Image (cartoon, rainbow, N blue to C red; front, side, top):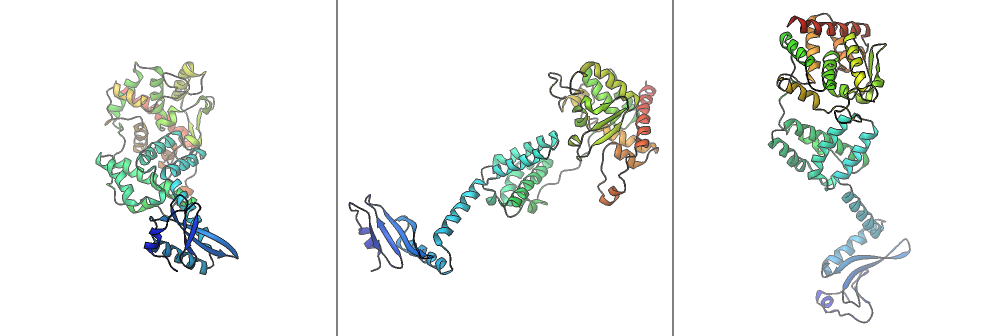
Length: 397
């Protein structure tokens, strides 16, 4: 006879557990402790099996019958309902462990294995740490575009629009990594592409006026701070490379006899090695610096330890102490100074200038036909640039 709610409520415990049946395999197990547990007995592939639906009254009689009926539908389709239940539970547990933070950490391990530049890794860690503060403990499959937008709006509220844009990109990279590993289905950041405030493009400050450049060059030569900082700035003006590439330079990269500097791929932005011709002025600066740091690894070590290179802010702070503000000149701006004046001279192939400062043509087809190193022209151009700097410096006295 089928059970009723009143019948179930009236069941009392005994010295031993006992069963009271409903119908179609459903029964309630009355335990000696007094608790009531719904069970479903069925046969699958000739074997008797048992499913547990939960305790009464948390699981009512009506709910227990619904669960029983669902299980019977699965049986009729040739499936073991208990196996399906356990698989769903495992999937749920897996999803709970696949948090954004865990996937972000895996993404970072992949990035480190790819030998990305230290500065690139540092920025990636910094951005993902911001994301993990809000999203880290959430299962990645539960994170939606509006949830991500809340995090990005915090940055926009502070006016850091470029950081918000970069953070969206990095979160998207983690999601694409998660999609590839099966932890997520889509990248929700794609829907946010046009939702953020676009930062106004602001080029790095650079001096391109010859008179003011001459003042800067003379001020650098007279800088009374650390000699290593002075030499780094003097060399940066001549070679016109990225400050990070110069700061992290090692003596093993220089051949002062052949007058070349080979920057390894792992330190280059485009992950390609870059060979630079060195004019005599650059060789002289390096020889002077060699007296100071030639016994170590770094050409321009930190002021407090030879185990690290100059810090990212050292060169810019030196410019500030020389009264050249951030709105007028930055250490990265020497590249723009070289590029502008070299192009304005009309003496050099624009492709040779771009190759010299390690710019890669964004036009893929054009890039295929512009792979020449322009080496001979770059050697002449490097000497012209160093001589021209001396001329600018002397003519402005």
